[in-house]
Length: 450
Image (cartoon, helix red, strand yellow):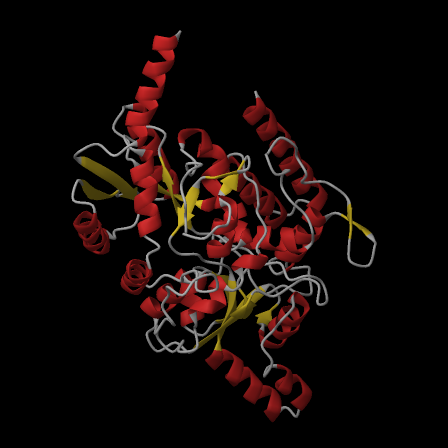
């Protein structure tokens, strides 16, 4: 028994200590080899026995990338560190090594968890933790914001003024803070002949031609106070009845679906968008759509379509004016594989990615928004097209008010939500679509717990 304990302790010690010559492999679905080579080289200068090998995984989409990583692990050739979306953690936590208990994120006297919260903020720590353990590390963050085509707004404002509708024209001067504001502006902008939309106020409500459709729906769900599952994914919360800010009974999943699809239902007063209109980014860039909801990456897509586009962005609208602000975050984080030859060294490299100069170099090279609210290591703004006011903080400041949305299996959840929205778009009732979705979530709970 004594010999067995010694062997086990020796094995664990060797696995957690850095071998004399070690290569850390890092996989990502983003072609950022240039900046990671520079970061890896600088890390090796500080740690001469450790090299960093970055691999760009060429994948057609997130599902394909995930499959390639999982298959690599099954064949014993997976990476030490790999990038995953923050909503993948519940599905893959069993494949990862959480931050070692003795690992210090800073030199303060705080506990490890306090150090992480001080640096990242409570919300980011929660979004990258499961089962009370911190598993993944983001090097950038992102959240949903509202995009406005400034030229469309100004053109409509002038048209309204010419019609002596000065109050309506003046209302367009205020950036919308609530979804009620969005609805009002969208109605002023929308032009349609019967069911044919010629100018859209807002491009949401569908699946295939709404930017980040499931994310937008989930942002509404959380703002109404709802959730998909409980925190560990063991219970379906989708159809729960709650009480709203006015203490009235409500079903958040239904409220969210009603509002989301109201913009794409021809019989609804909010109607302004449908699946036949085409690509929303192209139409937004052409001035045929006034507003979109999207992440920071949407800006690059807009200016790729039209470098002269005039765009303003602002915080994600809220469903309830006087309630606590609830935002929605979605980004990519690095996790350390359980099969890593040296988990401590892998975590050491993840910490190095948050060195002030290293993180600033990464964000500058990639144009991604950073964690400036929680640290001083970030770029100031994105000089993309006409979005000169597009500060890094617009995206990062919303992170601390973003709630965790548990997805036991992100692919199954996204398929269920898309099917639910499509059912309403096809003419089915909200109740039918919601009941079908809830039944699917019941099965997903069973699938995870069995």
